[in-house]
Length: 454
Image 1 (tube, helix red, strand yellow):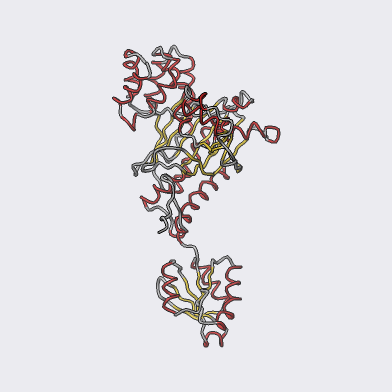
Image 2: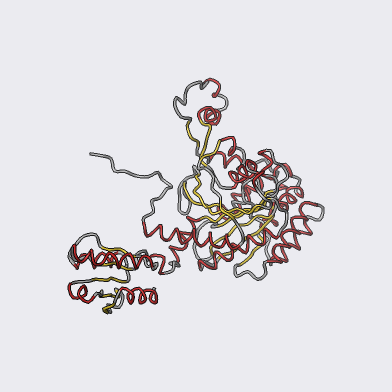
C-alpha cells in the first residue's frame, strides 16, 4: 500500500479560498507600499551561505536551512578535520548555499551588487517566502511569507515616521487593533555601558527580548549564564520593568543615561519619532524590553502586537546603519519593516475580518442544458467577461440540481440560464442565489444589472 503523502512540519498547503484571503493580505500591503513610493524587487530563494552566515547572531545561524552541494557532495570532504568543529564545520564543506532567513540581508546584498543602477535613497518592497529551521508551533512556521519595505541611503528619521504610518494604515485597512512598540538600540547600548557591560550588549539584548515569552526570572537566569555579574543584573531590573507614559519613560531614561552620549542620542531619536506619530490610530508604546535579537539593528526598532489575539509579533523592523558594509559598501544607512503575512492571516481568520467579496471568486454561472444551449450562451459568457464580470459556464450538461448545488457550494451569487423559451426571445433568466429573485433579461440588461449589484 502506497504511503499517504504529507508535507514537512511547519509548512502548509493553501487551497483556493485560502489563497483568496492571502492575496487580499498581499494586495492590501502592496497597495499601501505603492502609495508611499516603494518599488518592488525579488531575490532568489537561495543565497550563498557566505551571504547569510554571521548576519543573524549565533541563534539565527543555527536556524538557516542549508542546501547540500549538487552531485557527489561528499567528494573532497575531510572528515577528520571536522572532529573539532563539529557539525557547523562539516556543513561548511557540504553546503555552499542556503535558503534565505529573511529578506533584509538578501536586500543588502542586492543593493551592493546593483549599486550603480540605483538612485538613492532607494525605496523598495519585497513580498516573498523565507525559511527558518525552527521548532514549529502555533504562529511559528518553517516556511512563511514576509512583506518588507526598506529605505537605504538616507539617515533621516522621517523614514522611521513614514514606515510607522504605513504600519498604521495597513492595520487600519485590515480592521486589526494593534500596539506599535518602539525602542532604540542606542538606548540599549547606553544601558549596557551604564551597568559596565558594554561588551555584553548582544547577550543583554537577546535575553531581555524574550521577557514576554519566558518571564523575568528566566531572563535573569539567561543574563547570568552569559556571564553578566549579579550587581549588573540587579541594576537592570528597574530599567527592564520601567512603567509610565512614553514621555515619563523617556524622561527617566535621560536621567539614567545622562553620562552615555549614545544612550541620550537614542532617547532623542525615539522622542522625535513618537512626537511625529501622535495622530496615529494605533497604540504607540516606548518599550525598553524590545530588543529585536538580530545583530544588525543600530537605531530605532519596532514591533507590532495584535491587541485582540494571543500571537507573537505580526510586524517588526528597525534601523541598520551599516548592513551593506559587510558586503563592501560601508556607511550606507537603511531602515525597514516586515509584515508577517502568515500571522496576519491567522489573526484575520480568528477575528473573521475578511470582507465578504474576498471569498467571492466567480460572480456569475451560466447553466448548461446541452450543446445548443451552451453554444447560445458562449457569446454572452464572453461579453460578461469583457465587462469585467467573473464568469463561468458549467462544462457539462448535467442535471439542473447538480449545477445549482455547484453554484451554492462555490458561493456564486448569480446564475444565468437559457432554455428554448429564452433562446427564442434572445434572452436569459437571471437568478439571484441569495434572494431567489428571477428576471428575464437581454445580455446587455444582464450585464447592467450585475454591474449595479456587484
